[in-house]
Image (cartoon, rainbow, N blue to C red; front, top):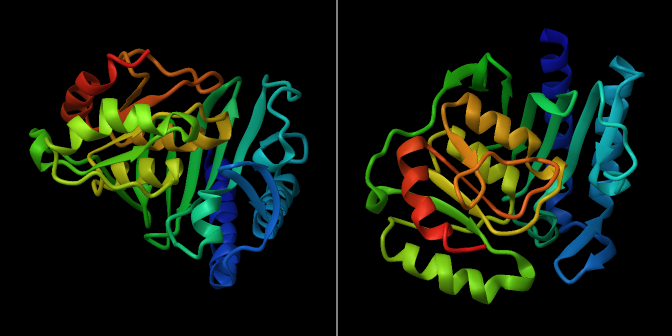
Length: 261
């Protein structure tokens, strides 16, 4: 396990340094996959760096990566690395340091290691299954706030359903909590829960495995919870919205999401 952790941290750290140098250039857009789904040259370059580090150490491991768009083609048995080279590309392309670089190692479809470079913090947050969650090699746990009105809860509406999600979730929730920030990076938002900066996070879209695998493990190893809108276990291969947070806040957030099908 220790070598897996070391490689994940090395890859995330390298990705962070590479993207940081290119942030001021506002990420030259290479391709548009949809209205809110773009690819920059930095996405491609970062992914190549990460894959090279992994393959140098584990040549037989498989790769599940966003810019390869190969989630339907990879045999998920054994060891598979799930990579999102830049989670929050739109923010990165705008020159905003709210993106992240997310790397997870799955064994037989279960995340066992996760490492995320969080640009807002300029550091790597990581976890290993059964070993806890770490930042700068210090073990940390989620915030223990009990009251929703004291909480900071990240929110990310799905692009094609923003009006519905703002009306049904964000508007009523915003009246009850301290602050409702949107930073447009799932992996960063989940890392901020594990750091105790966010108390919760609501993602209304349908993310891919590489979006959430590392972050889910990191939150859970820090003592938090990640479920679907109804409070059920999340399948990282088939997600339609999820709620994450410290236990007491997570339970209260479900009151705002359970009515969403």
